[in-house]
Image (cartoon, rainbow over all chains, first blue to last red):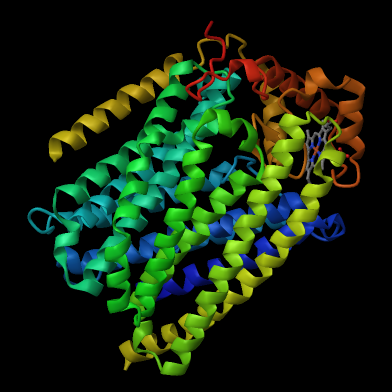
Length: 440
Length: 131
């Protein structure tokens, strides 16, 4: 591991902690408005969202930039990696400074002033330059994870630019176009970072099992194409209730139903998975990967339901959407990232007592996340019922029982903070060791 | 392999052009400069951290897609100016307030956020503006 990678890992872990802390405070501020008097919710929420988003992207890029050196048999150091990372860190810090001064850009996911998108774009282009320079040394007939990283990186650029098209007046000329393009790009961007992360998970599984075959072969590639089609065309579920042209709705609905194939594949592969689990469960890296797979399964059930417009009618605009987002970003993305950072940090070679603590942290995280997720679904169901079925118009009255359920959610959020806090603490210890090891 | 990848990419490009070009064909209501300023105020005050438009945004406050037709204008102005228990009083100037109202009216004219039950088709999709 080179020095820049070490910094990248440390920075990503710091963002994870920040996301958890801001998230926990925001959750309590949501339920108890008095807390909002100290730090207003419209300030807390972007801090939480941006920390989480930058955690995912920083962690994903740290992994890909590191692994590609081995996969593309890259020699020497890459100055581009350092330049990319410096711009990335400086911009991320600027985002929080702007929030502190209540300067917002007010776009979902990208709530900071849009001027900061300029350095982010520059940094991404440098990352791509670094990646595609090494691409020349790719193995002939590259394994699937290389394709996944590559499409993830390219689609991140495309969707990032698309997300900023609203600066061109034509794109916000009608409200329907403005909201459509905004959610087309946001929806696909999530698919883009998932490509980077699922690629990383596959790479790690190859490393753990020693079986290159899982990253080759027709079935693996077919499922990848299915995932890619969903990235490209499945964002429409955000917009089911927006009166755009009907084909957009029908296409999204049809494409999202192809995700049943993933569901069937998971169910059919269950027995093999158990066997694999027996072989590798002593490895922490593997356990994080399995945790992510469990969340893929749970979230898939939710996604399949939400993707039916007739059901979406009750869930859209409720905390069920948040449950989906949290299942994906914490359950799937964060677990893969912890597997990846843990792999780079060789946490499986730590002292037994540290490993035990990490395992405890993981167990606590999983239990809290399940409660957290179920509470959000319950809160969403209550709101959906009162809003759509009962048609209540007094907002505060409609929300009253929702806030009660959300107290469970906020409490479970504390469990997440403690569970992941334990993991991060021991990861940081491994990071310190790694840096001493390299400089010695 | 490459064939599938290229086909998918071409489809994506064509689809993107269609979405940009004709996805909003029913909406002919172009934004004027007041509406655009209102949108800017909406963004700079981060209203979407608590409010949704078409169900997208934060959940602390209500969906405001159709607030302009559901509520009287003075009530909307009062809410924005003075806030309530959970809605903060946001010091917006009179001009900003006018622009915000123009923006909310424009959003309201683009359609309704709630999907009426009769538009739900037996296949599970909605038929909005299609019959």
